[in-house]
Image (cartoon, rainbow, N blue to C red; front, side, top):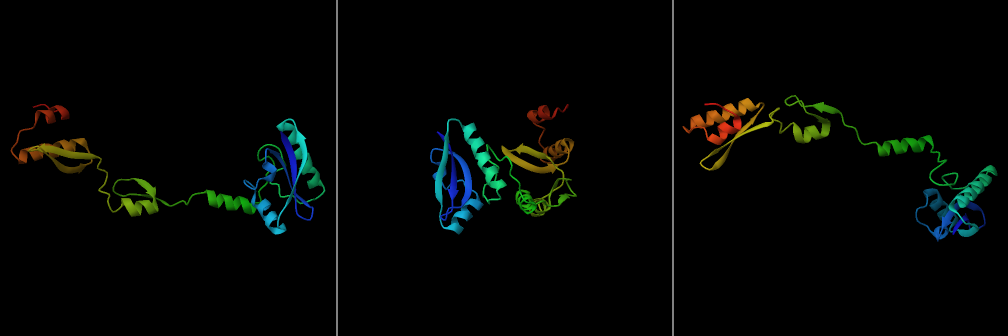
Length: 189
């Protein structure tokens, strides 16, 4: 069963109008800061169920009418909306908008480009992690197998440099090129 309700200060002034179901009128959770401040300043509240409704739509409409009436009478309510479903009618002050904008916008660092590899990133991250370890744009690894062990020969900018380095290594140890190496690199002998 849906209902509309009012929250009053202990001396009888209405400060909040709402629509609820079950025990919403008596719940203190999911309330605005203004509502909580009103409770604290007035040291408590009184609750009154104003009307029961068969459908949620009727309850929302009644809530809107009540909020409009109190607003027209210049009676201060802590409601953040004009009633009804959702945040319809919420109007934030310019100060609040600026606060939210600053809070929700991440810190923007100046973009910098690595002179060696041309990678771009935030100034702080690039200085902390990238610049000290950057070896330039060398995405290709040169590795060979010698005496059943993997031998790392370094990073190179092109695949042709990797192949040349591997061939140079096998020549330096007087070992013929392995068949797998020839097949993998697409070499002809």
